[in-house]
Amino acid sequence: MNTPLQIPARTIMTPGPVEVDPRVLKAMSSSILGQFDPSFTSLMNETMEMLREVLQTSNHWAFPVDGTSRAGIEAMLCSVIEEGDKVLIPSFGRFGGLLTEIAERCGADVHLIHCEWGKVFEPNDVIKEMKRVNPKVVAMVHGDTSTGRVQPLKEIGYACREMGVLLLVDAVATVAGTEVKTDEWMIDGLITGTQKCISVPAGMAPLTYNDRIEKILLERKSIEKGLVSSEQQRLAQKDRRIQSNYLDLSQLQDYWSPARLNHHTEATTMLYGLHEGLRIILEEGLANRYDRHQKNEQALVAGLEAMGLSLFGDKASKLPTVTCVTIPEGINGDSVRSMLLDDFGIEIASSFGPLHGKIWRIGTMGYSCQQRNVLLTLAALEAVLLRHKAKLHVGEGVQAALDIYKQSEKVEA
Ligand SMILES: Cc1ncc(COP(=O)(O)O)c(C=O)c1O
Image (spheres, rainbow, N blue to C red):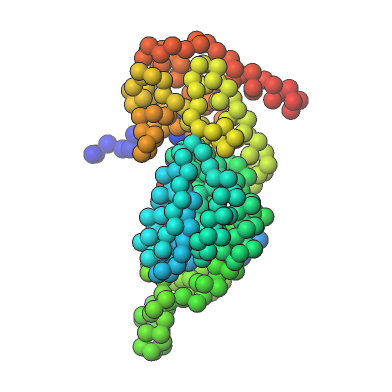
């Protein structure tokens, strides 16, 4: 207890939290500013501006909610959904289940459709269901880390806009790792998280929404009891008000507006980290960043397959930031993960629900998504699997990944 923190060195190849650029950690050790200090509020404004660029939106509202990604999801859903609202949730993994749980707690009349884990929906199947259910909201995950799949959203977004349905999207696993076009895909409300491809510690959930959502927020706007001018005014707004105070987007947007109406106390150090993380993303450039994620994913996949391992799930919908590997017959998946961590300091992830014990999930996200990490992971995984008596094409994994890196060096030269 009395010894200073001693954090072991790790290579983190999970779907989050991932490694963080030392520049972010340095920014997070800066001294504290008061939340209304102009030096701090200008950082808030700059963060909003950078978020708009990263989320590819011209929405006015783009700011982080304090709390992990699910705080952002909950803020969006509980601020938009009212008791009895019809919400269609097409779910293709664990995080469709999270949307369902939160929507049900908001009192929604949830229409849940599933597709087999490892696949995603044909957009037309979702659109047909929208026509049948006529929901107020469609809530969907873009990239589901539990199955390593990415759902195409463009056609669904267009159909939602045409039918006057709101589209809310969990893009926690995709923003800053693969293309997410909020405006072009007509997404009304989008939530992400800091600890994945944005590569900042867990603790904030950046989100954005357009004026169709803002209209609902203003209709449901609540004013803190101590601040309303009359009891009548307070009672008048009671029926439709947003059930959460902390996650009430109508109050949060006032705090992020020039009026700076006091709500919570902003998480100073997290904001420094997010500000620096966004600066790094924009310095790299979105297109370069997506290319980097894709190249490292390709090398990882080539290496795993050359080693003789097989990947889980439908290839066409593979999420570039998460690779799901089938655990070979007779191999204890947890024992492999423990040995990777204990002997090599490398962390890969297990899996949830029906996939538990069947697949490992390897993330290639943000600062962790580097050639060095991919090669180390392949080499270490081969060594550990050999110790577990797996039958592999020895020596071929790292070579296949190196081939990808060498080819891309030639193309770039
Ligand atoms: C797709 C997706 N949505 C939501 C979440 C929940 O995020 P958090 O743990 O930051 O609350 C996760 C976390 O892994 C996720 O992968």
